[in-house]
Image (cartoon, rainbow, N blue to C red; front, side, top):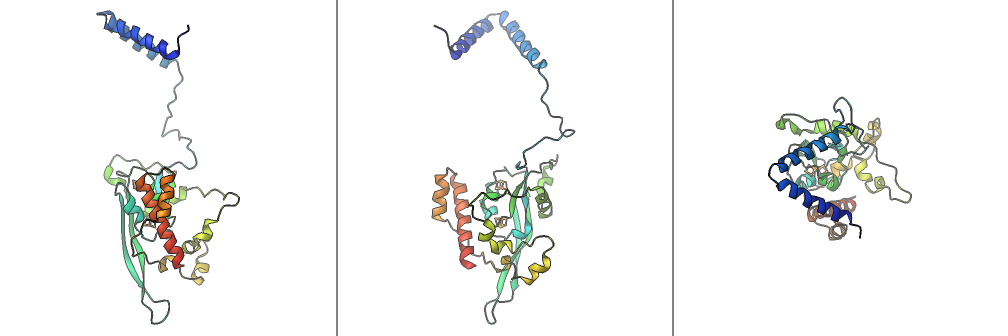
Length: 254
Ligand code: SF4
Ligand code: SF4
């Protein structure tokens, strides 16, 4: 009966072990075997890419680095809290805004002072991008920020914002899909498109000013169960459930 591939390999291994254990012949056999591998490899064409002289042809949505769309950030701190490496640093202060109606309580708004990511610690898990409820974090395909000094790998928000230039536009919606810009219309009004500053000024004040994210986000059980059912790890499921809770609160406030 013909031997299977596994049986042939096992038999060959056994034979090799027998030869290798023989005094004198063993070392010679190892040398010959090693040289045969070298010869085989030498005859194959090289597949090394000569980076940085030749740029790699990467997919459009390569996950190179995380970019920040500063105007979308409401300083809700969800990304920073959920980051497994604690490598997102956020500083902010509160501005007191006049009340909407006379006699009402003055409003406050969070103003982002610092947003930095330490890429020496980041493990590129993408949780921060997934959980940001306000679409302020994006994967950017830019990857050329290596350095030989770890201390320079903490990038501040001006650099993170520049990396937004590399982020490709979102793909068109599938037929029948719900338009997310309708759902988050309030958030989008905080992000006037280039050249529309005047229009934005005449519209209602940016939604960011009206958000009161004082209360820490809670777990939305339905979203948590759905994420677990999709096989997401507990940490990510909890983070997505908090995101869902924030979005529900925002919808209720609008
Ligand atoms: S990718 Fe992961 S480790 Fe890196 S900043 Fe985001 S949450 Fe933290
Ligand atoms: S989760 Fe998004 S909106 Fe909240 S602090 Fe992070 S980047 Fe800003």
